[in-house]
Length: 398
Ligand SMILES: Cc1cc2nc3c(=O)[nH]c(=O)nc-3n(C[C@H](O)[C@H](O)[C@H](O)COP(=O)(O)OP(=O)(O)OC[C@H]3O[C@@H](n4cnc5c(N)ncnc54)[C@H](O)[C@@H]3O)c2cc1C
Image 1: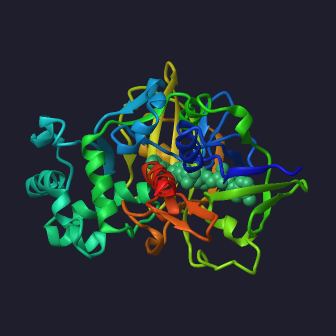
Image 2: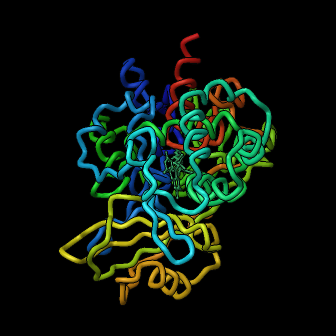
């Protein structure tokens, strides 16, 4: 007799794992199916070299409200970044501290060109009052200009910093989402698990029943109450949860709505190098506002005077030689670097705000029995993915 699963989840990323965890808490049966050979989806780390290399530079904001769903993550070992950034302007490196966390930020030696006292005061005002502005319907850059920030500060801080967060130099995200992330960056610890971002998935997955996670199974067709995988197996379900918008194209045409046809994603390319160098501060994220290629740089000391360097770029075409030259001219003490690996991530972050349902419903009921959830329906980060999963499972109760 064929087995009918109460719930099948396509995708073992953080959205799928959120749904699984909530169902397991309620003792409701489920099966996760994922085409990848390891769990985590976009939260992925490559361990094929001597180092843990994340598929794209990803950080955890420790105050993401939804992390409380996964207290198991917190006992990972983390590299914590200091609040602020280091940036290069006119050939000089400047360390810019977060004025909310470090009083030294107001002293003159901390000032880099364009970061005026007025900008600092406005920054504090925006941090403290961000909630007051979240319902304004204006593009992020216009909002910052109207708020009174100098154009140099907008370009050299806001654009330079947040283009690496949103993977978009136009900061084309809903203002409410921008203010949410901005406020978190100003107050929260920013960190990465020392063994790579996928460590958080490893912490989650060991808490779940491994027999309910079917990896290396690519779904190739979705019917009203069954799915078919590439190896010819069929699975029957009462409810199906799809956590990737691209899965829609697998749905039978009789009930395919083409709902996600306009969905778009921002891309990124991430380069890893190993460099012998000293006198370098690896506790800040580095920005490069004068570079058309680099969105951010982060360093991690791996041995005495040996650093792992991750360089993120928005362009998918840029070569490792170009990036290597830029990094060597950025850090005066660095004489040579060894290239390790590059990752091109085509569909890194969903970018069409039309689909974002920030802090509201954040999932989509496609048919009576098929649902979609994920960051593409809430907002493009870990917290948004978890939110979408939570909202979906809560809706099943009502
Ligand atoms: C480079 C990069 C940088 C990022 N930086 C940050 C950051 O700093 N902070 C932050 O909070 N967030 C960041 N994010 C966003 C965060 O990683 C995502 O929001 C989150 O991982 C999305 O999780 P998800 O489960 O919704 O989707 P996914 O992780 O994409 O999971 C979908 C899963 O579905 C599976 N799947 C798809 N099709 C099929 C099929 N046909 N059959 C079977 N399985 C299928 C996929 O294999 C995948 O595992 C970043 C993302 C990237 C890529």
